[in-house]
Image (tube, rainbow, N blue to C red; front, side):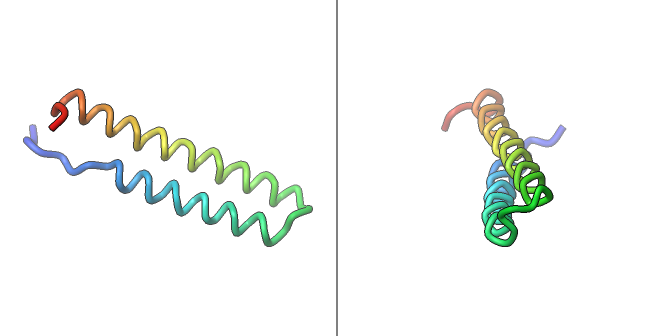
Length: 68
């Protein structure tokens, strides 16, 4: 078992930020299209899941390693 595992939370939050930027850009391109609405919703859900995964990683790290 490895003694130290690289943290995943910076990557998770970075991916969520990029997805939110893509969502904002997709909203400006086509406002009235149903496809645009569905894709913006998908990007929002994906960004939310990456954010939740990032917070889960932070909490798991605090529990396993301890707060330093």
